[in-house]
Image (cartoon, rainbow, N blue to C red; front, side, top):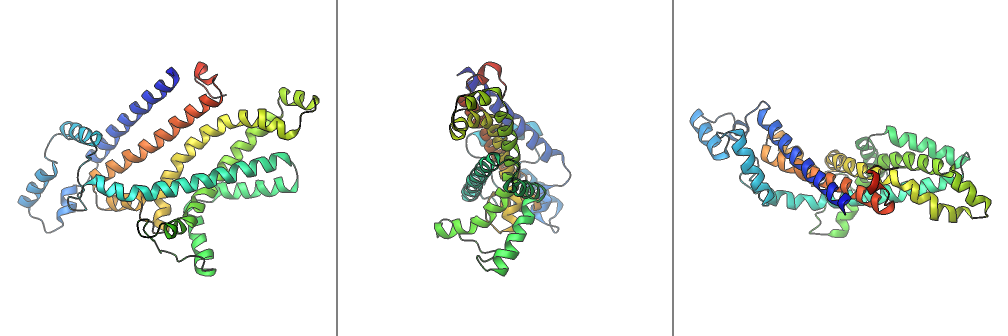
Length: 318
């Protein structure tokens, strides 16, 4: 219990530091959001009034603490670019899209990486192992956005399995919405699956060379029994930690993938906010993404502790 409380406390401290960093970065960089909102024809007096309305005339510390209190209460402010639209409404409309896309990608990553790793570790040194090594190296060296463009060209324009750029909102047709996300989820999943396959296979190979595995084999235990009762559990410990890092990569990678496939998620909202210097919206999105990332890594640490209770005594993954 102390281990879990410690991890949760570290997560809160991390989020607090992230909020400070995000706010300070967008407060000191060049460029006036009031000028971006007002346009080139705004007068000096109109600019002054607009800055007062946006709260930009106050000190940075006052603005930060007001923003932090409002953010914790569920009201991170209003958008500059979307003309006073509450940021909470904008994020609540787009966040389910990104979460579903990330969840689909995560499921594909787990299915692909674990099944491929178990298949190749059983047939080490064979043709299957060589083919998987080649495909894994290709997946590691191929960016997700390039795969997305490749999918659009091959499966969209050539085989016409989907309409490139076509997006169906989940509130209109959920089945059609899921269909729109399938190519994007594969574009995110394949490079990250290659990372986890490389990591998991290495862990499985190391565990299979252990003394307890040779002892179990000498006693007549089957390969499936050894993998299920001993090897897989121990090999999963570092892989679960890596999976937490991959979840963070999924959220960051989905920003570009959403732009490639014209998916109306958090990624496209963030790009629109950056291009219009909508600092309150950028800060809120970055903190939300950081929150999801920190939660994923904290959950991975807790799952590791559940798999191997010895971790809570040492604080390290074996």
